[in-house]
Amino acid sequence: MGFYVTDKSTSAPLLFAHSRSFPVMYSTPPPVRFNDLVLENFAATMITSANFCESTRVVTNDCRGEYRARWAEFWHDATPLYDHVLLWEPSEEALQLVPIDYGITFRQGGLVIMERRQRAQRDALTSADVY
Image 1: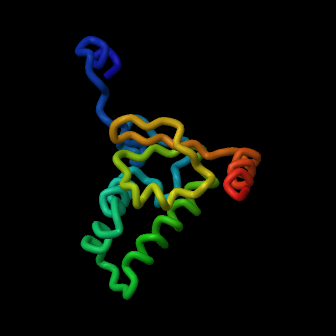
Image 2: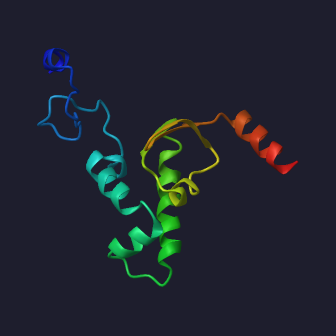
C-alpha cells in the first residue's frame, strides 16, 4: 500500500485493528467503548442533544440530561487512557462538555485536536479563572 500511496500521491485507506482478519492489529485492544465501529456510531449520534434525542432508542424523561450523562461517561472512560483526543466537526454543545483536563491544541476546518493538561497546568488554569 505504501508504494501505491507514493506513486499515486494519494492517501491510504483506513486501517482497522479490531479484527484478526485485518493485517494491522492492536497489541492490546482498546476497551469496547473505543472500538472504531462503536466510536463511529457514537460520533454520529452525539453531535448535539437534539440529534441524540431524535435518534436514541432510550426512553427517558430528560433526554438532554441523558445526552450529558453519556458524554460524561465517555470522558470518564477516555481521560485516564488518552492524552490526545481528535474530534471531527464537534458541535459547540459537545465541546462544552469536554472536561477542563483537555485543552484544544489544534483547530483547522472541522478538525479539533485536544491534549490532556498536566495537573499543574489545570490547577493554574483553575486558579486563574477563580481570581
